Length: 341
Image 1 (cartoon, rainbow, N blue to C red):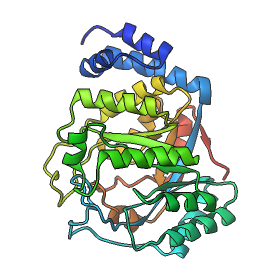
Image 2 (image 1 turned 135 degrees about the horizontal axis):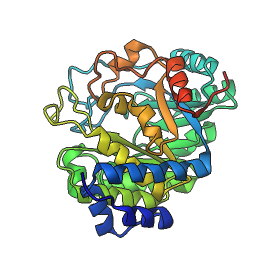
Image 3 (image 1 turned 60 degrees about the horizontal axis):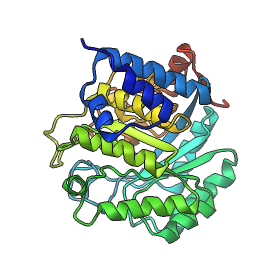
Image 4 (image 1 turned 180 degrees about the horizontal axis):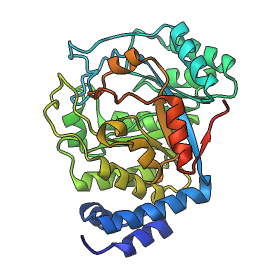
């Protein structure tokens, strides 16, 4: 038990930012009293802009191949035990049709940096989905590509690109990523996407090996200054056959705390409750709504695809939940789930 840090929380709610030292203290001295107060403020901030509306994003992982060798990711190139797959266009279309029947109007196409999918192949897939689902939003999370590819995919119909900074500390970025990647390049990709007109999704993992409280504060400040209107914070989860497989997973409660801070920093932004929360916390995504999130990601592919897409280790029975059950649970909490089915 401890004293509630009402003053810094109130300043954050009023100004949308704190001094770096204040933000570090708010993160470092987290306690139940401050957590409760912070979440109340986050809920109020979200309600002012979104009322009780929640969006569902249907995720389709369409390739588990990746040219990169990031130390935390189960899809890393050198993981010889990772089950690899590539979905055909017809399979992606099939999953989107199923999600559409359930009222989903936001499709997240996600995958490793798979150079076997040419720029034109991805553009053709996006164009096909845009023609088929004209009232849907298409979201990409495909890693770093060329500016030409980004423009092509936007012209084909994509509107949001998730490109997380992962770490604003150069040394930390190099500790967790492939040797062929750099923080400067990552930021350049993010700036290019933003300048082209994409809504760019920033974000990072909480509890990553070597991560410090000061670094978490820097991530939040970067997101604020970058002006991202879509943010994902999720727990680090160790994946088998990676250098970090024996590391401790991130604290799910800390993720919700950080999410609440983000809501006060960007009250009108889109804050995503990622599938990884289900691995770290019971009802993690539903609980994220109480921390200020307003986007829920759910798998709309098959059980087989979801379990073979091993970015982290999936616990048995922890797949992205039956869609109708998830919707009914959220609605039972008083939220208005945005579906049209």
